[in-house]
Image 1 (cartoon, rainbow, N blue to C red):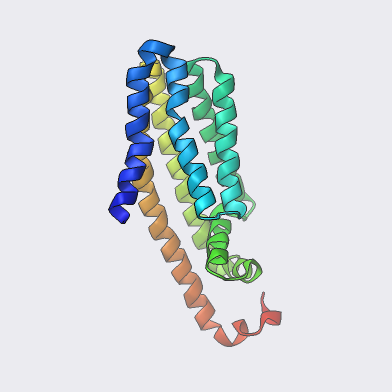
Image 2: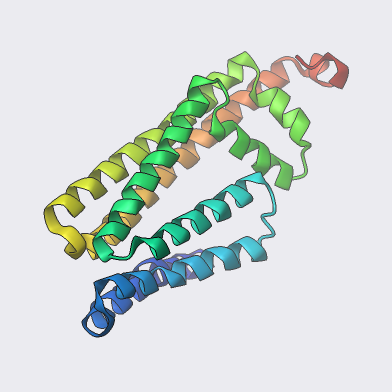
Length: 216
């Protein structure tokens, strides 16, 4: 099942875009071929969203980001502008992660809260646990990984586009997908670590934690 899932993702995010881009650009031009190559990923993401019923804050954030990206693609007017829009939008999202760390409201903590909510835990209880001082620092570190991911991937995109123009498109797709999987693995491990630390703290204060009115 896991292998089928990986193969499907490779087809949607790499295979189909490659075929559309390489075989379509000669007929409809770089911009429209690039635009069409993004459609499989958009359809697949929305399908996963609907299938898994991710009607929570994180899911809405992902879909809203996808829609904003699609709107900018449609407004770009050219292949190279479409690539640059993707870079600037990615930097903008990275800045949101940085801002969340500055105000001590790391987005990673909210992602964890929504995940626990899907598992059946009340958002309010998870929020009180994860935003305790002892736990917050770990979710700050997880959010920092999101920032590092954004900076590394966006800088790589910037370099490729500046040096190769629209020809860098397929390289961007491949490199970004590889980097995305690598960082996703690190972020997953970081979430496990932060979650384990939160559980340890909860167990340490088990008696107090069993009384909701004494949450701090």
